[in-house]
Length: 225
Image (cartoon, rainbow, N blue to C red; front, side, top):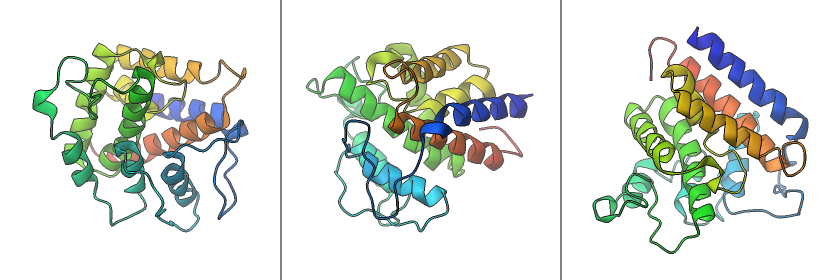
């Protein structure tokens, strides 16, 4: 039953995203409806092109922020996910209740919306590194951070992009977590409000979420994660 339910989620994510998810041509960067490209878009779309069967070309001109580097690590073997995570958690014991269970410290200076989006984009990449690639330690870390988000942050704190969806869908189905399901539903709903349909970046995020869930399902076919 879990497999069937997860496959239904995967099909739903593809149905919402596919009509708006044309990949940029090789050598071209993604720009959204306003002509903007965010730092995380660069490694994210390098990964998306790789998943589509194109050459896995690691981008060199990436920002140093954690969510950018976590996505970069999927195509660039010179970048190690364990090093990024360790750097993020160096101050974990000195945080207050605002970011105690998060991956990235808020430092009391980042705007809530920007910080939440960084966190969710990081969770999304970590789902690939952990659940989809069979790293049980990273999967457990991602689960723990997702649980903290559900207990402490609203899903609409971010900027209406559905980063992190695969983590919350996975928890909803594989762990029968009703709260995680509602969290995922809110993320999916919010990204369709402004335009009356999903925006281009969110479409690609949903397509990537479907791919991540499908890969994780295959990875754990003989057990649970």
